[in-house]
Image (cartoon, rainbow, N blue to C red; front, side, top):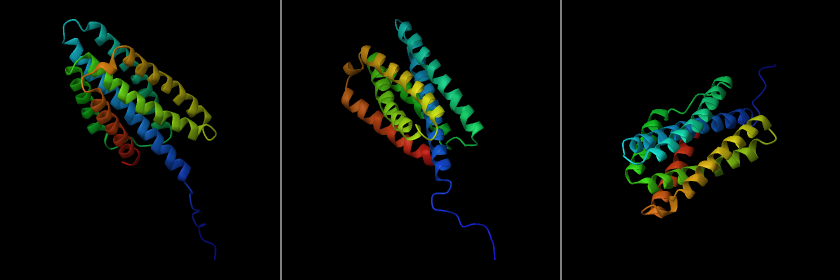
Length: 186
């Protein structure tokens, strides 16, 4: 009697893991776009903050390039986005606007906090994918470099001088790490 071969342990695990990676990265880039939109909206409405608004809009543009690429990858590889996208979009915009309302330094602290978590997240994925999917690992390396540039700019602009910097960044980083775990699965 010959039936279908029994599933091997781990069969499909690599595909499932790749789906998690793409889903969470797409969600992260979606959130980044909306954080910068929220910050830029506040800064554009604040006299004397035009330079910062332009800076934020430029960084949003970088994140939009990443998001567009992840949207393509989700489609090409048949991966659904996280079901949390509407929540992340609203929460990210609120985080961006909220930190901008706290001032320039708080907006920069937000950028530094988010980009620090994302850089570590990308670094782990790059290591994981280096042998299995070197082309994707190379793309992630490019995106990580952009995130590092955003983080470094935020530090140069005074992120560490934000009021309640340690608390602010700890809360934002904890939220980012939680969103990553949720987005991988949901």
